[in-house]
Image (cartoon, rainbow, N blue to C red; front, side, top):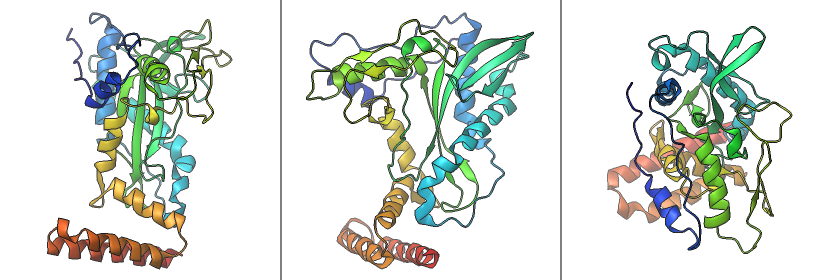
Amino acid sequence: MSEPSVEPVDPALAEALSDAMPDAPSAPEQPSLDPDDPLTLLRQRVIETLQAMPSHFKFDTTIEGVNATDLQAANTLLGASIEVQVVATLNLLRELWDPDLEWQGYRFERQSQTFPDVRLIRHVGGTIENALGIELKGWYLLSKEGVPTFRFTSTPAACAPHDLICVVPWHFSNVTSGTPVARDPWVESARWAAEYRNYWWTYIRKSRNDKVAVLQPSNAHPYPTKDMQISDAPEFDKGNNFGRLARVKGLMDTFIEESSAQEALGIPIRDWVDFFGRHSDSADAATVHAALATELAEHRGLVAGNQAVQIADLVQQIHEILAEQE
């Protein structure tokens, strides 16, 4: 049986760990998985399938007639549907994660009221057998925050060693309309993500308050029942930010940066986010256009003349489209 590949250390993670308190204990490490355990190879194949999923992702519903400035609600409206479609795609790609038919009878099922919310299970009589789980989150790339906003508060003890957390970025094919398109996901060990989140909160995060402990529920275990308490809670959290993984330095930094740099209709995602954010904050499209034109003029020296003209023309076209929608 082949041994799963080992990912290189993320530079952002290495930098974050270097900022840990001098007296901090060792940072949490990835779960030690037995290479001879069939679950370990299955897990690696599921990771590879999730990474290949965007090219196979299909969403039949076409979205039209939504004002560009109203798109911020897209994740709320379609987030659950996106996650359902990801699960359907995983089941369609069985040949990738079960090429030797060693897991016949198992299929991925979404269970929104339990953790993890996607499980690879099979039904035997009146019982359910769990193989592994995936905590699945969607991230609408053009949301005004520019980063994933979900919270992950599950305690490490509730995560089986082979469980994963997966964040799937998406946007509309034509930016303001079309069908949802999935982009490269972030996939990580759910247990390690939970442990590192707690470690960061206690030993890396800069806080003026001495209450930095994370309170963990007792008796939590993998594949908990709906009524089991499995959420960690900070001793003090005035800003209610505990569990927001996008704010945990060293965890998702590189993924967020790379996702924001990807292009939609030839324009980087981060620029779309900035553009729509400006229009959301101002009812006057002409004022927004003037501000963008001013910024472009200030930066003309950084690009070739013909590029500046093309960018100016594109800004004007987008301005006209948005003006028509108002």
